[in-house]
Length: 251
Image (cartoon, rainbow, N blue to C red; front, side, top):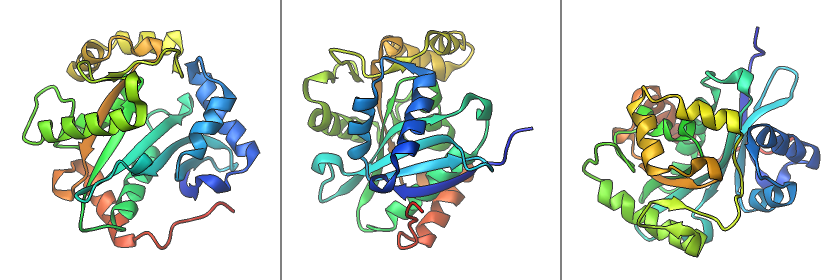
């Protein structure tokens, strides 16, 4: 029987070193070509971390957030960049990550209701990409491009160029680094390649054939309540209603 999981949002700067090492261990279990030094550097660039803990207070997953990194927002929109995201394999299938993420996104959106909001994320594997067709009407890249596709493609290009420079390959829509900054373990990469019955996984593989070498598919989703699907719509609205003032700090 799996332990009950809970999600809490903390400021990245408050996380203790022992927790940072646990976060890195979770990544290292699933990914090759990672270093603790680079992981710490990346974590320091984030604003918040969503921690998933079990009933023994052991971290079993996490995701990170930064709003408008390097000034990527504009007078018209804000960008939420999701960084490293992982949950321990024994908890795959749990909805806690989605629920916590939606609550956080809603709380962040409540801080600036005058501007549009977009989610910018990087997909090393199909599991991250699958959040898009499952929970959003409008996202980039999409199997069937819809109304806002070009708008989101332009945001993907603008943000990627500013954050990653020459590592951004706009013609392909991927980030290709001179040295891998993390890639799925061979068995997990094989799991992705074996899911060819899914049209979305096939699309992910078509758009990011070098995922197993650490290349990342740049994705953008439109964060507006009317464009959100399923239970995530209610959860994001609850986060908006809750507001940002109750943001938790690490204790």
